[in-house]
Length: 478
Image (cartoon, rainbow, N blue to C red; front, side, top):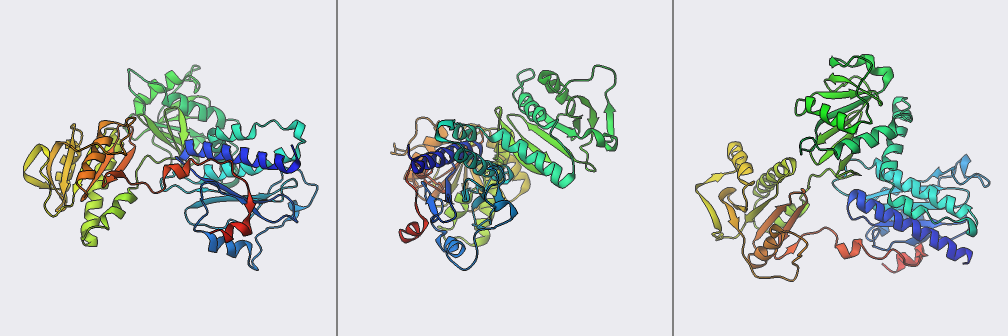
């Protein structure tokens, strides 16, 4: 293998590992990199899923104008080790998360990935990209014979490491607190408890970790005593104790090794808090949301659909902005209720001038969903098998509706009846929008016999193993 082939192999392994890892952590993700191996090399680009198409003017301004794109500092001098990374200017692309750096073995790297609209925080993703820079610099420092090929595999499973590094660095840099002795056991406990059922039920409640030096600032409602305090590593015991704070607004308090008692969630000291909400939960640091967790894995997902597709679909109809806004807010309220309570439902928004009559339980008179009490009733009716039928006047006409239709090519047997029924119904009723919330809280929006996606899945999962090309040639090919 030549030096150039070895370099390309390392870059592609790193890129594939980052893409697959972030796709598990944040949902289908594209990744691209702009780089120069040596100071006198021309810039090259690898962008397998066309992540950066549409950003050519901004990238041209950054890389081919008088504005310098390379930040040179004292660490940039030759002879430094691969782990000394000099940060580089962020291109500041809307909808893109970027991280760049330079090292002794790799003159310039700038990594890009999707900024999904439903991220809890971009910090773990930024740490993921920073580690990609470090791993690639390390791989190219080694001789071919010493190359382990582990970087791509490690980056695929980097979620817990990214969160650990993010929490530890921010706690030390911003708050002056060293979490390194506690952070790994805390993160393991959070996932361990989330997987532990008690009498068949997933956990609810808040578990808060306080630095031992700040424990005297916590106002305990009840502090545990005696030599046998509950150990953090005993997930079953911690899960049982969570029942004492379930849906109470109170919190179990830990010093990182033991459970010390019950308190109001502290607001006057640094804290890590894990809020359990059944199948899923959220991890916050000093009140700022960092990530979520679900089914024993960390994630960046807020598990709250933004429903941009509904907003865009409504623009196709001849309604006023106020009416579109009212329809959207009713839909989002119903979806949020289903997400928070963990049930599946279907919502038919029938916008035809002469709306359909659906087979279901009719309401006489229809109820106006602009009334908060009526909207709360609709949330309860959504739990019944079948769809809600809402018309353009924002009234609920029926519930438990059956959705009929003929077979369409886009059907997916791997999905449930709600999904495929929505495809069939909207294919025959093009002036309807259907929102389906699965019991796992995944949300899909349907119109005219198709699922409305921001980016085609075939593009997101395209092969990463394509050749690098000069950045100048990439601009010319736009």
